[in-house]
Image (tube, rainbow, N blue to C red; front, side, top):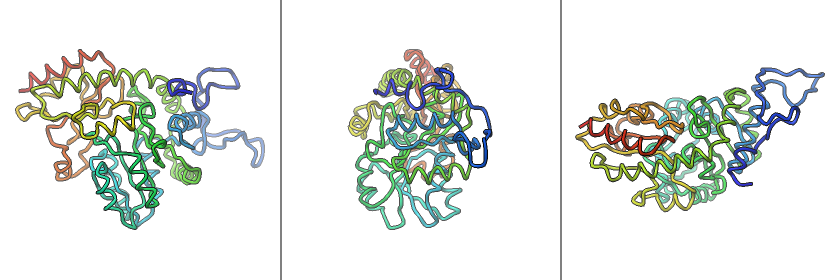
Amino acid sequence: MNIESLLIHGGVDGDKTTGAVSVPIYQTSTYKQSGLGENKGYEYSRTGNPTREALEKLIAELEEGKNGLAFASGMAAITAVLTLFKSGDKIIISDNVYGGTYRVLDKVFKNFDLNYELIDTSDLEKVESSITKEVKAIYIESPTNPLMDITDIKKISEIAKKNNLLTIVDNTFMTPYLQKPIELGADIVLHSATKYLGGHSDLVAGLVVVNDEKLAERLYFIQNSTGGVLGPFDSWLLIRGIKTLSVRMDRHLENAAYIAQFLNESPFVEKVYYPGLESHKGHEIQKKQARGYGAIISFVLKKDIDIKKFFKNLKLITFGESLGGVESLMCHPATMTHAAIPYEIRQKVGIVDNLARLSVGIENKEDLVKDLKKSMELSK
């Protein structure tokens, strides 16, 4: 089945009991049991819920993995995956990774002696030379947030397998519609499903897909034990959002390509980070491992543009956190999404103070360009 159809009919398709075409919202905490050790497959909704299970089966099918797990947020999903590791272990991680991922590693897991090293994972030689006996996993975003660096997922997976490491890929920016990390050799795929999968800025959720039954058992134990599960209503909302992913992403991609070209030619912009531009250093790898370039564009405004005025002057584009909704969202990584990362590291990797990140929505692309252009002109 092609992915456009799988998005609508994958996982649990409708309700066999009533014939309802939409999976029901099983808004319950517990289940009646007919006797000691006798139930209909469900005991308590932290352990298992039919609506959440339908979502988990759907994301597993979409990512072509063995099992899916749904969490209360992207960070809950990341935390569960990091809980797989032990004190003294080390993880190699992309150097301009999402600020929340850095924060949980640096401020929470570091307390339990789980260590990390920030590396440009697009540099394969650097990755290989950083592997020691303490390293247990390579954690990548491709594209990275916010500088859109591209890592060759297949080659990273090969390096990981050669050294008996796990490959973990955050696929939030691409979604399974555009990129299939498990097909490229990854062991674990993560999503902040709050973003493109939900698509409407109305829920917070995280998803994990694994390609190994034993790994799935370990993660399910962590999920059930720590309890950061996604509720039934949000599970249903997410299933509903996923059904329109293909049509939304097609429009996101069309708009992003148009806007990236505008920004690349703008006299107000110093640099554009977008893998769809041929000048982007990861363009060819992205073309090889994904079927699109995504709809996140980061760009550096020239120094004579007042970035605070630029954000205030936007009318159509919303200034706010998050990404992947139908509406276009602009943020300032240095003080918003990546504020947890120390200033020195931000400067070193390129998260400078005049960097803006645009999540391109599905509005009219010419209206979006007009908004950007006018805001820049008024901010000199």
